[in-house]
Length: 325
Image (cartoon, rainbow, N blue to C red):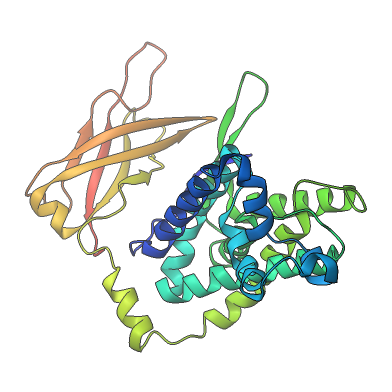
């Protein structure tokens, strides 16, 4: 299952989440620029359990290199598809968790869960001489937090089934629950075997993300923490992409729904994308919001309503609702 987006709009700019994605990309570019020396670079800055348990191996590294590797491993990746999958997942789930925790707390939460997931992997693989790299453990912590914070959210998901991929909305608790079950299943299946994926780091990150979330939610929104959160508030626009579920009576060929905009958008106008679930398919429309629109104004999308047996098509009517960002 490949997540495409979620249905929970963030109320704040995810500055830390975007920064983390940028840092991962920069680290990956530095990594691949090493060319033939990349393997040595990964061994130095990746997490290698044997470097902490084998005195002979440990002697080749300085104390700062040992400490740095406990964090740097989560910014390196094993290839293009590895970093693409991780960053896309972080992009989808991270903004909402940052929205709830605040930027500074989210940064600490991300680094702590990433570090703990690495330690979880290290303890279970004390003699391993294979570098573990990737942001998966930290991202698993973010997914664990999302699992608790937004269980009712829906995840637009691509399910590749041969040449007929399905795109459906799945409840977040089911999507993330299935993902966690898949990690446990793979960890048990590869127990005692050499695997290129740190399944237990994923499991540890997810579980500790749930545990640590309870402590981070208790941090008061005061001082520096509160200032950062207020500074990142989206003051001018509502979410660009909105998922709508239009309804209509049985004897009416038209459909009706509400579209949300901010006072700023009502004054100056804007563009919105609306996504309408239609069975296994999704209908995507671009809607223009005229300047000076008022609360209760109805926008009409001709021919986008129900279709009758004789081929007639109704319209889709969107009622404007002005909400504070």
